[in-house]
Length: 382
Ligand SMILES: [Zn+2]
Ligand SMILES: [Zn+2]
Image (cartoon, rainbow, N blue to C red):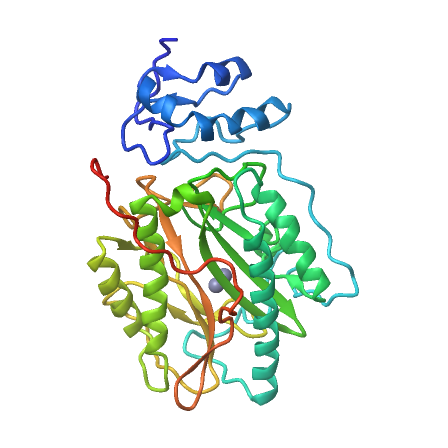
């Protein structure tokens, strides 16, 4: 099959750095899947075991890429149709944007007006953040090759409802689903769809719950299957992102300037030959999902203000293997790296105390995920 691939197309092989050649997967061609280009017969064979799972879902009729002419920056594609909007029982208190998609509370907040929570509000933040951790752990335990991100969304949605909580992303500025699922080159805000996870993928799950008037927000990046844990670049970007967050949190205490976190994060990212995404920032969080302060993750930023006891905010560095610049898909949400290289993120909701910090969304002893050692470098390393 000597169909000329369009310029710029990348080989579909997992982590293959090559441009696509003219070789297309013959099964995909039969199924009418047009984007399955590989660089070589060798690469095609090597990737067959994971690639063929694409056929299974595409043979079910009706799946499609809604943006066929969009110049995607990496191998990932959206797989539509999205599932029906999931409902939240009326008995569960909804945030003010749930009906029309437009957040109203806090619209007039000035950037330097940062809430200090009293003991009652702090206790409510503790509660919702603990519930959010439970939901993230349940979703993470379900990750495996073959599951779709839409199935993860269903799990998150149900787990929220079981905890008498509203999944905060649902209809926030019209986001269509209950969790953000960001795979491989997706930086953040990935929309759960019908794509199956493949052995070798990495995926970030970003969970936020609204319970008893307060939001709790956290995310982690996970390895799907054993292949990702054996891939040096994937481990480097995921573990660097994890360490960047840990190092920044160590400096959270009264008096620390907000602008300092970016210096800590970028210094560590650079030492691992990674870059820091600049477009998306950490944020204040309480009865409002996103409020002041903004917490940039890059060095030499100009954020104004300092940590004070009673503040609650997130730090959520996004770290990339390649360039820091981002490109958003035509769905107006999915943010990807401009070079299609992988990216990873971790997030906690934090409470500044009199002496330091309380990690409200801290991992539990039995939380899935956690650090993975760098794989031994084989010859022909990337
Ligand atoms: Zn989040
Ligand atoms: Zn957040």
